[in-house]
Amino acid sequence: MTALKPHYYLGLMSGTSMDAVDAALVCFEPEFKLIATHNIEISDQLKQQITLLADNSNISVNSLAQIDLELGLLFAQACKQLINKYDISYEEIVAIGSHGQTIRHYPERGFTWQIGDPNIIAEKTGITTVADFRRRDLAAGGEGAPLVPAFHASVFRSSQVNRVIANLGGIANITILPKDNTLPVTGFDTGPANSLCDLWIKKHLDQAFDQAGSWAAKGNIDTSLLNLLLSDKYFLQPPPKSTGRELFNLNWLEQHLQKIPNILPVDVQTTLVELTAISLTQAIKSHGFKAGELYLCGGGAFNEQLTCRIKQHLDSYQVTTTEKLGLNPAWVEAAAFAWLAKQTLAHLPGNLPSVTNASGARILGAIYPGTVI
View 1 (cartoon, one colour):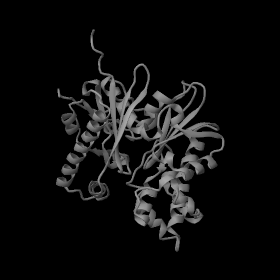
View 2 (cartoon, helix red, strand yellow):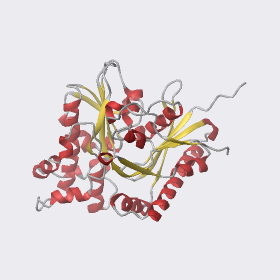
View 3 (tube, one colour):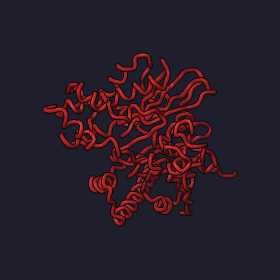
View 4 (cartoon, helix red, strand yellow):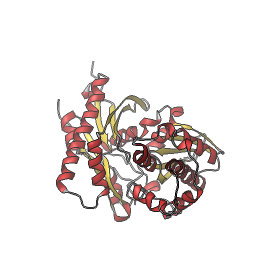
């Protein structure tokens, strides 16, 4: 009997929060299915080094090369740990799709930059690796982000109901999925999701993140601060648009806080959650549907304070998580980059021009062939 051809794809994601590398193994035939998951923490030392690279305009080439190498090794380790943990054959995996770690995203200047050497991933795992997905879209005049809407459209779109998918990572983005398939899928980054909250709680409580939004739930919304934050021109800018820590960072927040004396740290945290909830829901009201279904994914989907505020502001929508659609919200982004790798190898587009504003559909990513183990 002829052996079945390999049919698994493995997606890697390391986001703005830089807390861990997520690895998701998926298959697409006969239908999409999440097979196995694993994550591996990014050490505090490596996280600090990445932060210095991302936030410092004067980059040391030696430091950049070293961290590129270290991240490549870490991504490869995440893959191998997942494969060994679930006793999966390496030969069954067609390809790895690696997002990499973003250290720069300036679409207005025409560039974005993700590191984590894919040569290392391919060499250490022996599996063909696809990476550097964003820059081809930028070369075609697009934003290079968000890229997940094409995956959302592939696995979450319904012909019966209008849906919005909200990805709440470090940055929040939405995908608008009309039930009418003659209408285009649209989407964009709405602003910060977890990034500012994570930075603030790290500064004041030395915690990596606000578990379930419990700290934010103890404070009060400061309307003066909220209005100041919402006055940023990014929120008023029409899509297509994308953003990152280049704009929404601790320095951005503290510049606004200088105008609000004697505000309690816990009230800042509560206000930051409200900032995410309002900027997200206003974007949905302005560019989505009057009513429909909203599915949350990403780390923010587990923040009870945030999800409560989103529901409060969007009562015309049924709000839940992508778990109801069969995909755990923690693994949607990693699964998306597995799908993007599949698209690349099939010579199919991975971007949506209606989302990124690229001049056309493009096959994304560079391919690093695997080796025989």
